[in-house]
Length: 269
Image 1: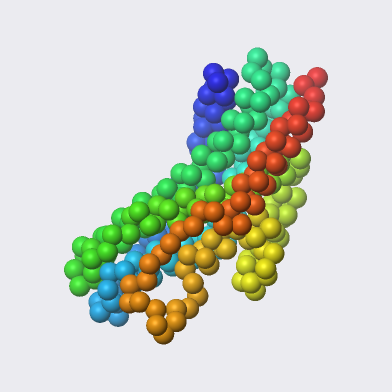
Image 2: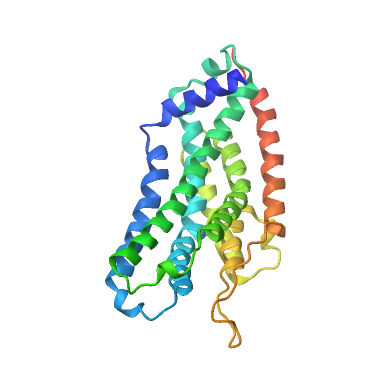
């Protein structure tokens, strides 16, 4: 455990001034801020809507943009950046020659990438709630305060995190195997586009493809259309035991273990 903590702390110090680290902070702030100003500029069109619908539009717009493309590509970039530090400096042999187990080094890198993903999603949640409530304060006619969405949004972002674990493990493994930029990033981008297409066309086996899982999560929570007999305040139910989440967890665990065996083969001579 001590080796893991030392390695994890080392990852923080190595990345704290990099684009990968700051993108987890700047990206949620930028997207939420842009949508905040968009809603503020068009608030006169929204004043007659109930609080639930205001939150549905505001949070749904953020989740739609983030969950479909930005989250998968951010994970691709984070997984690449964590391992690229060692590739670029050619320090893998030095790292594995330290009196710290390979398991501690490998797991610390993986969980640091996971930590950055969690930070990013947590900031999306906080900024969504913060800017939504700020809209209600700046324009009291916007009834954001009528509906409390905190618990539901927290569950949605937790499910998004679970849906992204498969992508994280696959990309982390690719960034271990390839030291250049194009292969892991190119594969990740192509797979993300393929996942978006699979989810959007409603392919029945899309749940087997990890890169489709974030968008499948969004589509399952926010249906594209509501029927005429839908209640004025529909209930949003977040089901964590869907097929895509199960596949995501299985892929994440299997690829994580596979990556460790690949690390064991790395020479320190």
